[in-house]
Image (cartoon, rainbow, N blue to C red; front, side, top):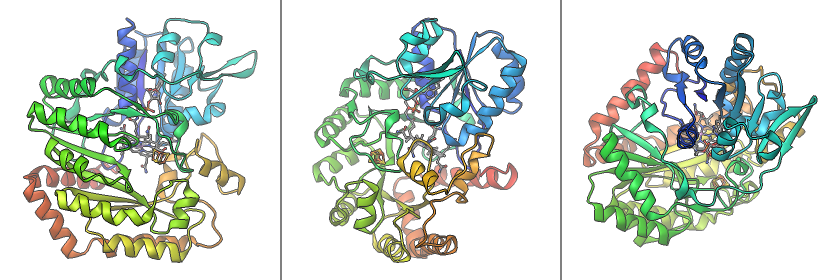
Length: 452
Ligand code: B12
Ligand code: SF4
C-alpha cells in the first residue's frame, strides 16, 4: 500500500502516528509499504506518480484538515491510475464516508484500522471485514465493527523509519517522537470523535511502553517524547508504575502530555513521580470556567477541583498549560468572561483558547448541521473549519463578541509577568535554545511559506 498523509501546512507540524501504525501492521503481514507525507514534500503528486506503480492500493489518512487535499489526491489517482484501489482511514473519512464512496474511495475504514488494512491488502472478501464501508451494486454497505483491539501490546511499534524526523517542526528537544500508551476514553464529550477508538479504556503494558521508549532512544536518538494519549492519568496507579519503571531506566529524557489530562484527577504522588520520570510539561483540559457549560459539554469535570490540581502541579515544578474552548452553543458573554478571568488568575505558564469548531463525527457537528449552521461539502476547503469562520449558531453570542473575548483571553493571560515566568521556566529546563529555535521556525513558516 502507498500510504499518503495529505497536505495541510500548519505553522508547526509533526508526523502522523495513526498512519505509522498502519504501515507497521502492513509490514508485519508482509505487505510492501511506502509513505509520503505531503506536508513535508514539495511536488508530492510527482512522487505519488512514481511510487504508486509499485503498489495495488493507495491509503489516504485524514482528519478534517486533510479532507480537501486528500480529495484532490484521490481525484488525481482515480484519473491517472484507475486500476488502483483507494482506501481512506482516519477521523474524517470515518465520519464522512458517504461523501467519498464511490467516486473518491473504494473502501473507507471506520475507526481503528490495523487489522482492516491488512485484510484489505490480503484481498479478504470485503463483506467479511468488520469496520469498513464500501460500495456494492450502487449501494454503500457498512460492516459494523465487532470490537476494538484489546491487546495493544500485540501491535508493532509505529514505523518511524519511514519518516525523516528532521523535516518536521514541533516543540521540545530534538529529535522528539510521539507515542500513545492507551486508546479509548470512557467519556462522551460532544466535541470529540470518541467513536474512532471507542469508550473502552485500553492500556498498553508498562513493559511494552517502556520498551517502545527505549527503542526510540536507542534506535532514533529520542531526547523527548510526547504522549498523545486520550486520557493519560485516568488510572493513576498505572501512571505511577510506568513512572517507576522509567525512573529505574535512568534515562535523560523529557516527556510531555500535550493532549490535555483531566483537571479533576489530582494525585500528588502520581505527579511527583511523573516529574521525577522526566515529565516537564502538561496541558490541563479545563475547557470552561462555567460549570453549566462543562456539564452541557458532557465532560463530567468538577470545576471545584481544578485549583487544587493546579496547586499540586505548580508545587511539583511542572510547566503548565491550560486548554479552553470558547463559543460553545451554551456559552454566553458571561460564561466567556468567567473563563477569561479564571485563566488569568491561575499560576499556569501557557493557555490555549480554541474557538469551538464542530468537527464531523461529533455530536456538536450534528447539532450544528441540524441548526442549519454548516453546509457540509467535501469540495469545500475544510481548512476553513479551523479558521474560526465556521461555528455553532448561538443567538446568545455574536461572532464579534466571541472574537472580542477570544482576543481578551490572550491579552489578559499573557502579561509581561507571565512571559517572564515562561522564560524562567525555559531557563530552568535549559531549553531556551530549543524553544526559541522552534518559535523562530514557526515565524518563518508563517511569514515566508504562508503556513497557517
Ligand atoms: C495527536 C493529535 C494531533 C497533533 C498531531 C497530529 C499528527 N500529526 O498526528 C496536532 C496537535 C498537530 C493535531 C492537530 C490537529 N488536529 Co488533532 N489530534 C490528535 C489526537 C489527539 C491523536 C491522533 C493520534 O495520533 N491518534 C492515534 C492513532 C493510532 O489513531 P488515529 O490517528 O485515529 O489512526 C487510527 C485510525 O484512525 C485508522 N487510520 C488512520 N489513518 C488511516 C489510514 C488508512 C489507510 C487506514 C486503513 C486506517 C487509518 O487506523 C489508525 C490506527 O488504528 C486526535 C484525537 C485522537 N485520540 O485520535 C486528534 C484529532 C485527530 N485532531 C483533530 C483535529 C481537528 C486537529 C486539527 C484540525 C485541529 C486544529 N485546530 O488545527 C489539527 C490538524 C493538523 C494536522 N495536519 O493533523 C480531530 C479530528 C476530527 C475530525 N473529524 O477530523 C481529532 C480526532 C480530535 C477531536 N477533536 O476529536 N492533532
Ligand atoms: S475526555 Fe477528552 S478524549 Fe474523552 S471524550 Fe472528552 S474530549 Fe474526548
